[in-house]
Image 1 (cartoon, rainbow, N blue to C red):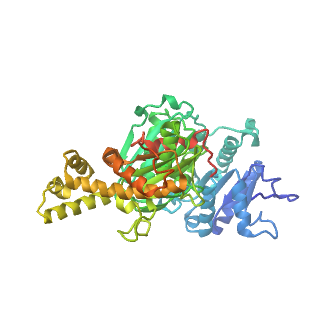
Image 2 (cartoon, helix red, strand yellow; image 1 turned 135 degrees about the vertical axis):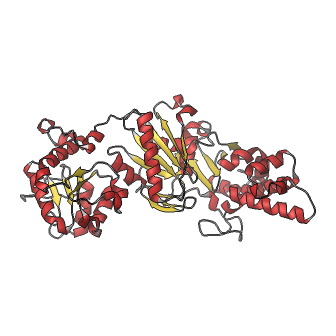
Length: 504
């Protein structure tokens, strides 16, 4: 929304003019007014409710519109504001709109100890907690002018500015950008990071992908943000030599709100509502942050660095602790209205079966994901033992894993062969349904499970496809993903590829 005020002494001329939105608790109204008057006397325009709410305009609409159009969101932060639902709402909206937020601390309340921490990050704060607020006003004016100039250089004549060596937000924003993009893959078990020069993709080598660590358990929204923050800081320091990246892309394992950059739910991590974009936008102001589902990111990697060099339309399916997928049509990754396009793991192939993480039953994922294959192998071992038959699956007992099943297959074990044939039949049935709808030129299979099972399973999947799909699509080639481990991290960086139409 665009707000325009005219013919009033306390107004700004248009929404295009730079101005500061001042957010405060009613109990800090006197401090907010003093700061506002000081800034305006220094020719820094301000917007402050209720003073600047136009007559006849809905109050909340006016606030949200003013936040959307402001150059800087100045938060008067105190114990009072930390408890204010209205202030929190304004901060969340500013973070969602990626408006630079500068908390002005007027008492000793630590934002990190409040629910505001996700949206404010841990840097870029103006500390006015020691002594009277009047003693900090001149320094605040200087920093605000600098910040507005860095965001909108034409807004204020740079000759009128004086430097402030004590300003972390100004110093941080003055970092040069490196010309490279950081990609982070937040997996259910590991976090991976990479650096990619998206203008020189031919120069990429596996050595660029060398940041890997285990997800700390138990995982929480806060612990994940802190881990990713530390990895990004390490990459910035070691790979970019302190310079900021052109962008930060983050791949996450679950449902994503692409517009807000929020991980809505990750079953494998057991976390909800993780605000990646708002958190890192505050840590790295001026650096665009993009968040997408990990399977779509891995598909994007195949588009630009893998099978996409041969096919313009294809499907990628990744089998691990779950089943993720992505679809490319005419060199565009599909998103869908609610960002759920291509969820092949939740195609129904049975009217019964174990419950899926989505809350339904009969989903393809519940029959072909890694844990499901292990459960089937253990059940097969018990069945064979009850029939007085021997199988290598019995010897491994509770230590049985997918590598053990592959090893049994390589030894010619018939029970292991039955497991793979049953899984392949169900997998091929699900793929066939998708082929009938999308008609891709190829299907790429990846993920941790397929890295071991691809060669053992491909023939069985192909037979099931030919049995269940339309004749015109039944012979769609199955190929192995070219980026089995690093695809999601690279795909996260490739969110900033020149051909990526990121409309979110």
